[in-house]
Image (cartoon, rainbow, N blue to C red):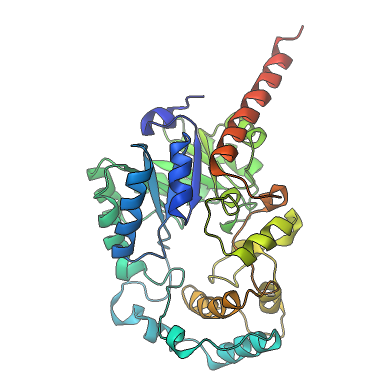
Length: 374
């Protein structure tokens, strides 16, 4: 199992694992895959701590870093306009009241004053404030071999900085048109993500999207398949469609090493594939997540519409800190793909990797026998 991307990155298996948890990233890389740290929520100083820890726990194996730098968002350009207080001032009072009433209806108390003062980041908030500092921090670590942007091609100066450091640049896309633009911008690896995927996603299914993107970018650009992939049979299908590897995320949320909140883990293990929804309720951009009282409230036409990124992220961030603290299951959704229906227990990361490989071998051997029969 040696697609060119494996040779290029020096990895054993073409299994790319996105996780916000450093323990999962390190465990996947140690097992022969390629762990990718979702670094959006870390300040540059915090990111340095995370990457230094990973360096010490991957046994010299390579790994990657992922950020979410959208092409268009409120506060683009940085400066005072992107400061949290100024962004919050753009949120209508009706939205804050709606959220307060929703949480009150579920018995969620206000945060204590000492916790309220510790403002956490919201998705997309730190784009202009810290993204370039995060990249500079990442490029100081020689084992970081790929940077991936979750919302299209990163800015040209970031692509140039990565290339100057010998680091590959990847980007997620949901259509052939987006893939074409990313290659033109200088992206080295395309992650073609079907609508089954967790988090930000488009509307085209993985089975349809992968061959279209492969044909669009040509044989010299590696394509990774994402969306609805959690086992070896799906990995074999992705490679058969022309991808060089698989980009996975949801299956790592419930592994033993993950730091996913216990209430979310319970919801994830109980969920079926039909329990996810593509909604703007979390970040302001369409993202697949567990259906919850939160997503249902924002879908009700009688209630306010979700705001653009990063304003909706600010709203969700404050609300989620309140309902997560109380271990409320009804409101506690999580970004996750439709593969969640196949996740039914907590397992060690290495076991998940090796099971994928074994199932891939069994699947390709079975297909080989079909070809060899008279």
